Image 1 (cartoon, rainbow, N blue to C red):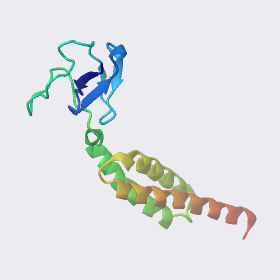
Image 2: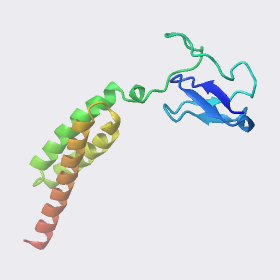
Image 3: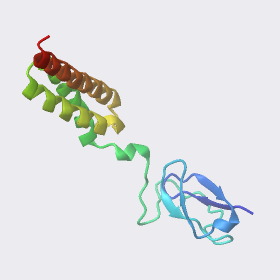
Length: 143
């Protein structure tokens, strides 16, 4: 007989074998980590709680809760730094650090709600780094 219980994060009905009681489980929907109730306990086949009511001490782990305002700002800054890196690629001491910072911030912001801006900023920063390397090679070998 399977053990049925509700996820503490997203309230999805989860099922597992009766031999897994007491072990930790990770919800496939939201990723919340929780203990599996013992077979036949009061949490086994738990009814769905009413809306707005949560167990104290537990937090929901929805994927949208991981994106912060800082990540959204990092997406915009990454885009601006990527454009700046491309425009200043002939000025080697300036372009490389600007492009590198833009690349790091863009990668960090890929999980934000502005992931398109972050992706464009990451690509532009990467192109700024490649352009800077191209300019360096051209200067070193006199092309």
